[in-house]
Length: 469
Image (cartoon, rainbow, N blue to C red):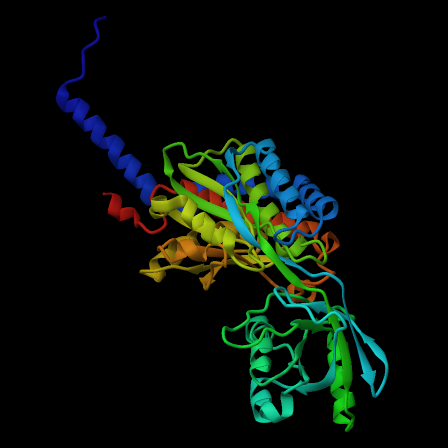
C-alpha cells in the first residue's frame, strides 16, 4: 500500500506538540525530573571506596601543602593526573603566583615567676624575632577594649597576650588577624594569641595575620588555651610574667603554583559552567585533611561518580582545586582572571571549605531575587532527604569563589553540622583519621546531586522556567 506524505499542516501540528511536551518537561518539578538520577548518585556515593583512598594519599603521602612548598606542587601534579584518571576532560593547571612564607624554628617559654615551656605555632605571615629572641613582660588582655584601656603606658616594650575565649570563629578570629598590629600600635614588641578553637589538648592553632599599614610588624604566635590560662592565672595572682620568644619566620619571594581544573563537558550548552571545588593548599602543620583536602576530594569524587554512571549534563561541570586560599587568596583571583568574559556564563559555583562532617545541606548567596533562587534550590535540596541534607538557607559562597560572585555568580557552600571542625582547624590534629567515612560519602552524595541537577536542569538557576516560553 502506498504511503501518504504528511501535509504541511500536520507537520506543523506535530512540531507544536513536541515543543509543548518539551516545555512541560522543563516546567515540571525538579524533584520529579531528577528523582531517579539522584537516587542512583546517592546510592553510588554511599558505597564509594575511592574517595577515602584519594584523601589518604593526598594527606598521608604528600602531606601538608603550604603555598610555596614542594609538597603543594607535588599535590598539583597528583591532582591533575587524578582528574584525568577519573575521566575528566580539559584538565589544566593555570599558573598562579603565590606568597611564600616559611615558619622556620620557633620556641617560647615562661621564665618568671616559673620556668615553663609554651607550646606555640607562629601565625602565618609573621615576621621573626631577632636572632637571640625577645624577652619581655607578658600582658594578658581580654580584648581590644582592654588593650586600649591599658594604652601605650601599659603595653610599650611588652608582649601582649590576647586571652579571648572562643565565641564562634567569625567573632573571635579578629584577634588573630588584627591583634598583632593593634598591639604594635601601642608599642608592643610581640603578640601571643590564644588559639581560635573551643577545645584544646595542648594543641595550638595557626592561621594568617594581617599586618596593618603604618605600624611596626611584630612577631606573633598562637598559644594553646592551657598556656594562655596559665599566664592569666599567674598575672591575676599579682606576678610579673616574663616570657622568651624565638621565631625564624620570614617571607621569601613569591613562588610559582597553579590551580587544577578538570571538566565534564556539557552535552548541549558546554559554554555554560557550574563550578565545584575546594582549596588544595593547607597550613604547614597537620595534613590538611578536613581543611580542605576533604572539600577537594568531595568535589572530585562527585564528578567521578557522575561520569561513571554515564550522566552527561546539559552544561559543563567544572571541578576546580584552588591554590593559596589559606594565606593570600591568589587562586580565586587567578581563576577569575583566567575565565575572563566567560564569567557571565557561570551558572553557579559551589565551594566546600567547612570540613566533611555530617552534611545538612547548602547555603546560598546571590544577587537579585534571592527568594526565587532559594525556591529552586530547595526543590533540588528535597532530593537529599534520604541523607538528611535537604536544608538550603541564605548565606553561602567561600573565599575562592568570592571573586566570581562579585560578577553575579550565585555562590553555594556545602554545609555540615560543624560539631568538631574548629577542634582540628589549622592544627597538627587535622589528619585523615578525623574524617569519618560515612560522613565523607554523604558529602559526596550531596555535592553530586546538587552539582548534577544545577548543570542539567532545563533552565539555568537564575532563569525561571516560564522565561523560556
